[in-house]
Image (cartoon, rainbow, N blue to C red; front, side, top):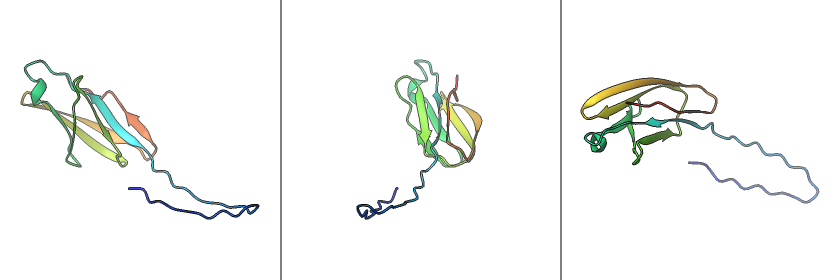
Length: 100
C-alpha cells in the first residue's frame, strides 16, 4: 500500500521532494489444456503460496513480486509441472512461462 504525502509549495520558492517508485516485476504465461483438463488446471508460486486466476484463454499473471527465484507450478489434469524463474532487482516482466 502506498502512503499519501502532502507538500506545501510557496510561490517563487524552490522546492524539492524525493519520490521512491517501487520496481514492477511480474511472471506471466499460458496454461495449455484440453477440453477434458480445462476446469482442473491451477498455477501457483510455490515460495509465496499465491495462486493465479487462469482466464478463458489459459493466461495467468503474478504481479508485485520481489527480486528472487520463484518456482511456478502448474497442475493440469492431476499432473504437476514446475518452472524456475529468476527475477532481478530491476523492473522486469517475465512472459511466456507456458505449460503444455
